[in-house]
Structures are given as structure tokens and as C-alpha cells.
Image 1 (cartoon, helix red, strand yellow):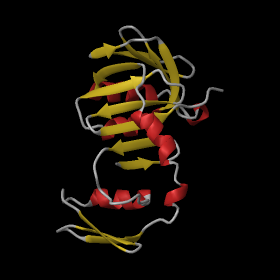
Image 2 (cartoon, rainbow, N blue to C red):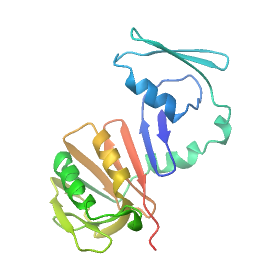
Image 3 (tube, rainbow, N blue to C red):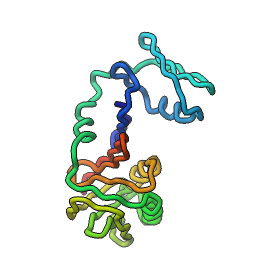
Image 4 (tube, rainbow, N blue to C red):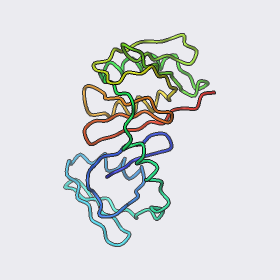
Length: 193
């Protein structure tokens, strides 16, 4: 399993990559993402890691704090079944969020409110002066639910989602998650002021 995270986002991809737990920096992941080659070979010699393709090679040191990394706490959310699931059109959701973002400022901590309603997700800025509804393509175990989330992080995760319809799992006190086959993306919710 490959897990990428920062303080607010987490992505997990169920694929065997390393023989043991390895911790690499987000800067290394960004650098590897620039390599246009689809096939990147991985080699490890002691603490030195090599990622090689026809385009280039990247050497790095393994980060030593692997045992301190809270992977078990993250796996709880990755593996947990959320009570409710819905699907919305990805491009329409991104367009809606980009419109709402015009009314969200830094004084709002870039927060928006998501209201999961019977027919879709209503998104509004904190002042509730701007709101729009995106209708569900599909909904299972609907439950009325609302949460506050950082719009920039939500947009970043949506843009990285590799499907036309976003499967969104909700009704959790800590986070929401997107699931697409073996890829799970988690975004933590903001604390309400």
C-alpha cells in the first residue's frame, strides 16, 4: 500500500511498491510526478533509494522516522466503511467549487460548507451568501449531513481524481473520502468556529 499525506489530506493506493515500510518526502513525489515515463523502476541499497526511467534517475535517502509515522491511524479511515456514499459529476463539481471560491476569502480560512441533501450536495461560503447545488448521479444510504472543508484542498483532490464521476463517502466526524477502485483519497474536515 502506498500512502501519501500532509496534515489535512491523505491518499492511499493499494499497490505493492516497497518490500518494507518506506517514508519519502512530498518533494520527491512531486519530482517523480514530473517524469513523463509511465514506468519508473525502484532500487534500494541500504538507506539509498534510486528511482530510474528512460528519462532520468533520482537518488534519495530513506527518511528515518518510519516507525514514528502514524500509518495505523490513517489506515483506520482508509479501510473504514462510511455510512453514506454518493456520486457526482467531477467536472461539474469542480466548476461549481471554482464559482463558489470567488466568494471565499482568507478571513474564512478558505472554508466552505457542504450540505448533503436528498437530491445532491449544496455548497456554500461561510456567510451563506453564495450557494449552489450539484445533483447526485447516484446515492446510497442517504443521510442528511453537513461539514466544513477547505475549498483549496477539496479542489486539489478532485482535480487529481481519475474518473468522470466522483464517488464520495461521507457521514464521518473527522473526514470525507473519495474512492476510485484501489485509490482512496481522504480530506480532513475543518473545526467549526
